[in-house]
Amino acid sequence: MKRPLFTGLCTALVTPFAGEQVNYKMVEALIERQIDAGVDAIVLTGTTGESPTLTREEKLEIYRRGVETAAGRCKILAGTGSNCTANAVALSREAEQLGVDGLLVVTPYYNKATQNGLYQHFKTIADASTVPVILYNVPGRTGCNLLPKTVARLAEHERIVAIKEATGNMAQMVEIMHLCGDKIDVYSGEDALTVPMMAMGAAGTISVLSNVAPKEAVAMTDACKAGDFKTAAKMQADLLPLINALFSEVNPIPAKAGVSAMGFGEENLRLPLTPMEDATRAVLYAEMRKLGINV
Image (cartoon, rainbow, N blue to C red; front, side, top):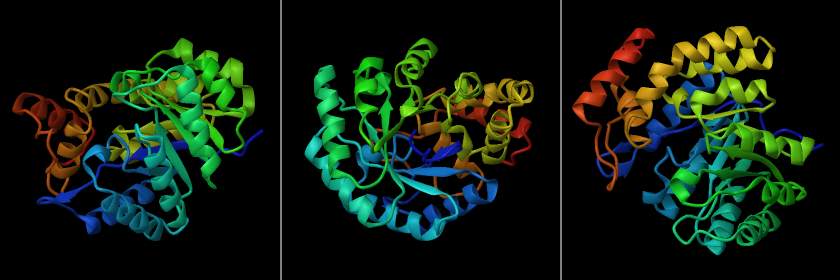
């Protein structure tokens, strides 16, 4: 059995900008806020962190700041995935040298791959790595699905310790658990399915919700860890309108709007992402206020 990288709540953190530049001081402030809320881990430069429009140098500085700010108080994970295997290997190695605790590696996008190509892609990255690797399966964004039998092959690798499952397909998650047993942890990649997935045995969630409601998200996953799924289910249901609002436009547009409205940086996004529309923004702010969040 492999040692879990984390259990519970991991925030997929937004990347704040000041004008056109990354606001590194605000990155540090957001990390402190997450740690104060009790999160178990933070992913930097993932999907929610606008990784496609960040430069290599920006990513590395974000990792450096993240590791230094967290100072061991929570796990810091680096989103180092790419549709070029060599580039993913190179960025992963540089992230490791900066002290990150693990890597979140998405399936190749646009060029996609066969299942054997996906296996070779992840195996090559894990072979070159010295820290744990989390597979990231999000077919809605990448156009390819990492199937359970391929996950089972990859689970034999000593450094591939988990998968972030963002298919929204509970049956696929259950099949992964059946085929892999304790060789790999499963994390929910869908905020709306955190409690159902943890009730089935998922080790936690990698969350967008916790950007705007970290304490509430931590309380929900803590209830799951304690086996109190009745309480957790009530929390999940109560948070669902906010979760829906956070995905009413392409992530991370609503998450960035919510974080900015609370005073954590500007709402700036890099093209092709654009600011939230007025109608969906109004719904988001209304749901935040219902939870007592001042916006």
